[in-house]
Length: 131
Image (cartoon, rainbow, N blue to C red; front, side, top):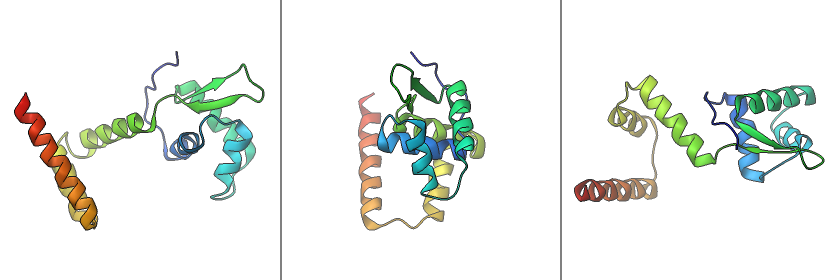
């Protein structure tokens, strides 16, 4: 069982995680190929980043196959939730309301996005009444 990541991924680490979430388990060469589609990066840099991420517990490696297959240690939604909780705590003093108000004032939402947000708020209200 992989150990649970103790630190939040950096921006570069998130790029690698996004490759793994999108493509599933990948050998190092494929990870590098996907990353260089967005710009130049040395293979040795990708290899070092993957090793650091493995040491941190952000990714796991299947050593039984050749080439070795790397995959994310946690599902995307779990990592996103962890990152969001960290942002709420550090940037908004733990206030989900302040975070949501800042997001709503800073980003233009489509009518469909607003409708979906309203549905989620209504659902959360119903869940709160059931407790």
